Image 1: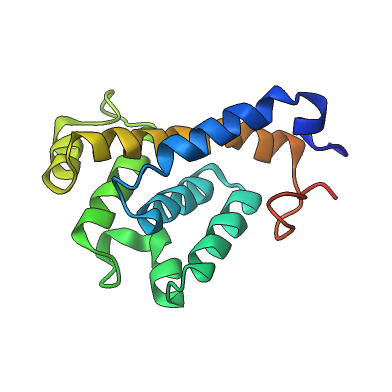
Image 2: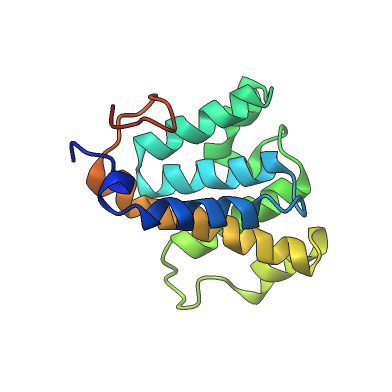
Length: 153
C-alpha cells in the first residue's frame, strides 16, 4: 500500500491514540508491554512490528540479550518471572492450541500470580493493541525501520 491508512481513514488515528492511552496506564511496565508486543510481532511474522518494538526496547535502554531472548523466552535468564508470564499469555492468545482452549487456567493463574486485575486487563489490551495493528502491518506493509509516524513515506 503506497499511502498511510490513517490518511485514507482518519478515524484510525483516534482509535490508535485511545489504545496507546489505555495501554499506557502504568499498571504494567512499558518494557513489559514492548516485550509482549515484540513477541506478538515475531509470532505473526511481521518484520515491521518486530523492528518497531525492538527499536522501542533499545530506546528504553534494554540490553541486546534481553531483546534477542524474547524469541526463546521460556529459558531466558535475562527475563523476569512476571515478564515470562506475560509472554506466556501472548503466546497462548496468538498460537492455536491442539487442546482447544488457548488460554488455559494454568497460563491465566501464572499471569495472575504476578499482576493484579488492572494489570491483567492492561496486558489483555496490550495484546489487543498489537493485534489491532497486525492486519495493517501484514496487508499495508509499512517499511520496517522507518519512523513510526511516517512508515509509508
